Figure 1 (spheres, one colour):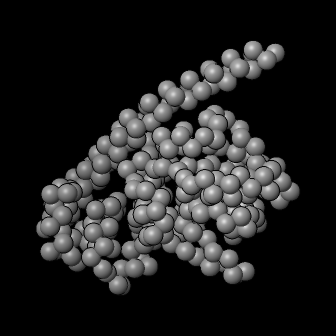
Figure 2 (cartoon, rainbow, N blue to C red):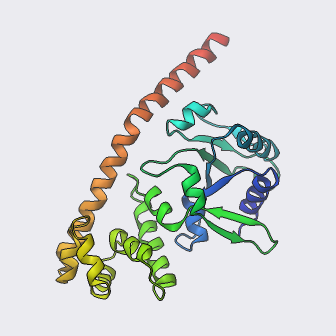
Figure 3 (cartoon, helix red, strand yellow):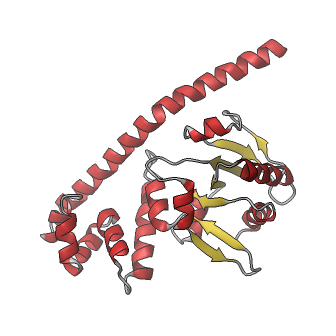
Length: 254
C-alpha cells in the first residue's frame, strides 16, 4: 500500500468514519489496476459519521477544490464533493466523497456485503464488494471498462474453484471476455438457460460465435454509457448552477 493512501485510510479509521473505498484505489487493492491518483469513498449519510469525516479531513488538511459544497442534501442527489490534501505525507492527494451511487442500493446494504482487508499493522480496509464495484464502474468513461474486465477475471480466477449460485450469476451476467463467456456457458449450462432472457448474448456464447459476441459486448458497453450520461445530465446542470452562484458570490464580495 502506498504511504499516502495508508495515511488517508488510517486517518479515516482514527475518526471512526464508516466509509467504503471505491474507484481506482479499490481496483488497485483487488489487483485490477496498477495506480490511481485519487481516493474515492462512499460514506454513510449520518450526522455522527459526517462529524468524524470532517475531523478526518481536518487532520489531512483537505480543502474543497470545486463545487458543490459539502451539503448532505446535495450528496444525496448523487453529487461528489472533491477535496485536495495539504498535510505532510499526503500533499496534493485528492479525496472524493459520495453517499449515493447510480443503480446501487443504500450504503447499509453495500456495507453488509463489503470486502474487509486486514493490513499488516492490524488495521481494516473496507471496500465495495467486487460485484458492487463492477456496477459502480459502469460509466461513460472508456478507461473504466478495462478495469471492469480485470475485476471480473480476477474474481473468477480467485473464486472459480468454489462456484456458488451468487458467483455464477455474477460471472454469467457481467463477464466481458468472449472466451471466458464461452467457457462459463459450457461449465454452467443450466444457469445459462435461466439467465438467457436477462442477457441474450449468452446464446452467442453457447454456439461459440466470438465475432458476434464481441459486437454484442460492445453494444452492452454503449448502452451502459448512455444510461450514465442520462443520469449525469441533470447533475451537470446543477453543477453549472452551483458554479454560477459561486462566481456571483465572489464578484459581489470584490
